Image (tube, rainbow, N blue to C red; front, side, top):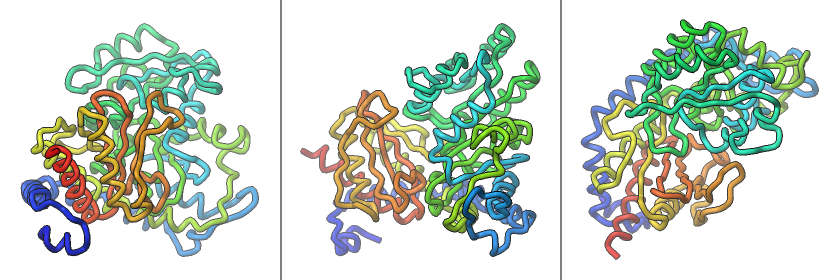
Length: 427
């Protein structure tokens, strides 16, 4: 499709913006093929899980009251565990976000006097508040849980020597936590190979230490998940990758039976745990969303690759690089000016199916130290598996782009963003 065809629909794109994105598309075919092969493997894995769990039409309906004996809910949790490489799972609409799933997990695994050890550096802003790095009522640290962290080595690699030394010195450490994705930092995600080495190393040194992985944005980007090679627990949001763009809310925790049994009491009430919790609305979006997740994640990955290639060509610092192996769906772009970051987010908003007329501006978002700008004209409010972009208003004014349920949407949005940046640079 050329710029004349697009402009006939009312877009008003510069010819050079369309040509630049098409050239980036043509140069990305090998990377796209890798993504498609991963999606094919993961779809087979998910489909096999559906069959082995005996999912039936009756499992798509909800429940009321206390939720005792909710077969649909229980089967959904078995399905997630099977599809994502765990022994057990908690999958609930009542888990309101990825941050909630992470906090829930850590609160269940840790006891007062024990230490949480973040081995991938400083966590994401909202997790800092949940831990208590940023003083917050009800945080883990306020409840008597200690905290320490291990910086990454150059190249965004986990520091195995530093981890070993700390684990040998500090016997109070009970959970070693890894944040797979970058958060609001300009680093590559933690690779699965690096994670595998660290998990094996930790379990060899301290079998009593559980490894927790914040898996947000990373689900189905590779043919394995952290639980496939020994992570005790991983957690994330259902309005990201594993919800396939259909889940309206919710979060998941997948892991070993021993770990899930510790966490489930924190989910509701000790003594009741996972046995209660109803959901009257249909479970269909959760089952169908998981079924679609490998394909939808692939579309988001291909969109991120396209943005990476075209903005790198424009001279912007990007991570990951266009031909890097992808470990999550996030693409970071350093704009070096607040005006360009705002313009980028506004371009994404204008190319959204919902609230396209809105103009995102920076605001004081709860849980963040800096003002944040967010573009998300999504069918599910805030769903970052849908086309979205955001970033904190601090130097070097990095935009974090993610999502796209369809690659065609992602491609049009890429043209729009390039178009607006080219117009700004020509002023």
